[in-house]
Image (tube, rainbow over all chains, first blue to last red; front, side, top):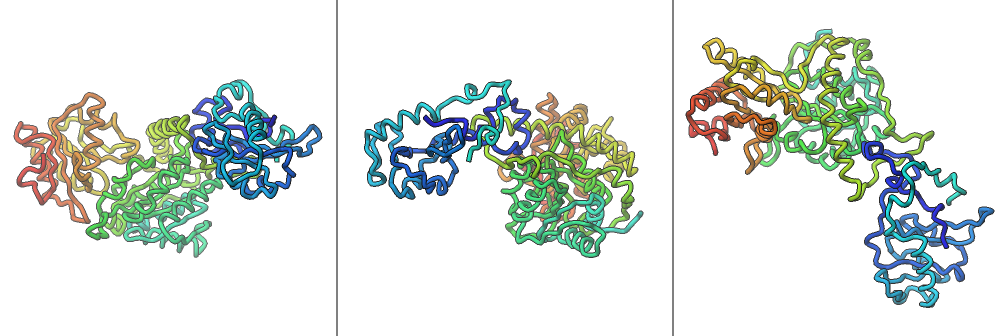
Length: 161
Length: 397
């Protein structure tokens, strides 16, 4: 399961009052704007078993939504995708040399889009379930971060890449 | 020090006293001589400033925003088509809350092509989120260059200011102008300090997006802070009077309006001749007054409604027309400001001075004569009259 603490914080999820953030478009670095993934029709899924951690997708993602998952010692053990910001462009699947990134239909039938990946449908469905549990783009803002809590910056939380 | 200066030269003196750190501008008649004067000041070393020769007005304002986002005090100037070319960046600058000061030399819009003065350029951009102020003479233009920064940079406002100076009527006309001493100007206007800037010690994101969920909040606070500018303008003018010695009257400049039966509302340099004619009428027993709008954003709604509540007839004289609309933008603004506050007086709109035409003494007499007939119950209220074109027929209903 991907660990959300490595993904960027949403600015408006801080629970700040609008007069504290809506009086200019200037805000502490390290935060992102609202969830921005609504137009995605195909969802990329990384098969962690086949993935060689070559970081091609990590470098090529035009929205910087692919991040490193690290173990307790800070070693990158997997790559994961932040579906709050992934637009489903498919560049990651195109540049994957294995290939182990599948593009699956967002409408939910789990079908792998033709010609992009050789990952098995079974494997894809399994991964999809895991990802949906951890990174649903439909997740509401208020439940993410409590009003009273000021979350530490992402770089203070164990070194996001 | 007293000097004999054109409006553009006077404005450049005001900008020099404000000590901007970055000027980015593209020349356009009748603004050109203000940026020429500033370029000379930078060249000769009397103004320590980065002067950017940009390739267009769009770039001029984009560069000014970039400079402002580093915390620099910035200036730009334009006119007419240049202002319209800049229009996309206007909302970026105001939404980004960059307190840029811009001088706009009011000039007609094409087509037909015309380089002379009217106010259709700035009046067509009232809703781009900038504070808009209109100078009546060269002294006020110079003083507004300084005061605009104080208003724009006030934390309660944090908005760009467009100072409008009538093309040719002011920009190229020479008057005797008092230039404040640098010491007085420095006492009035401290250096710009803001948190709305890039900072290596405190990394920020600037100029980001805001989706449907929160976008309205940004517009709400933009509106609120623009309304707050009224108080700030008054405070800034009081401070200017204390340091530089000239007192300005806030969002509007009311002349003999207290007991007036007929009031002509106008803005910019046309106010002078309107006051002359009002004096003439007063001498002949007609209680006439002139209400000069200085700030059109924020709208001086309370001042307009209070000044016009007791009049028999009100006229709005403007160098603008909103095609197919209810006269000009100023007329609509005045009527709505009054209506919102429960004031409904018979009103006429006088359109004049388009494409640089003079607004003559006789035309202003025609305006007041029409108002006098309206006050006496003759003629329909709400007419839009093009001076010298359909004033004999009584205008459009």
